[in-house]
Image (cartoon, one colour):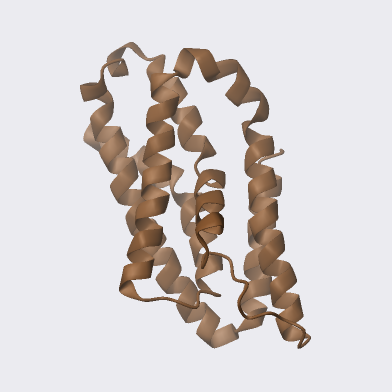
Length: 189
C-alpha cells in the first residue's frame, strides 16, 4: 500500500474519532494545549496500536472480530454518548454535576479511543492477509498515516467542539451525546 492509499485509509478510519471528539469537545473543562495534545496522542496511540494488533494477530482474530466488533463499538459509544446525554439534560434542567464530562477523565478517553478504533483492528487484520503487507516495513506507511491523521483529526474535533460548546452550551452536549449514540447504533447495521 502506497503513501496516498495509506493516507486515504487513515482519513476514513479517523472519521469517527473526529465525530466523537467534536461532540466531546463541547463539554471539555480543560481545553489547554497540553490536555488536547494528551487526548490526541491517546486516540492516535490506541488507533494505531489496534491497527498493529490486528495486523500482528490477523489470522487468529479474523472470525472473532467479524462477529463481535460492532457490539463492542456499540456498547462503548452507547456508554460515552449516554453519559453525555444524561449530563446535558441534567445541566439544562439545573440538576447537573459539572464535574462529570466526556473526555475529561482517563477512563472516558480510553473507552472513546477504543470504541472509535475497532475498525482499525479490522483493517489491521485485513492487511495481515494481503501478501504485500506481511512485513512490518510494508505496513509502516499505514501505521504512521493512521497515527498522524488520527492525532490531527482529534485536535481539530476538540477545538471545533469547544467553539460549538461556547456557542450552544449544554444543548450542544445533548446533541453530541445523541450523535455518539447514533454512531454506536450504526455499528449494529
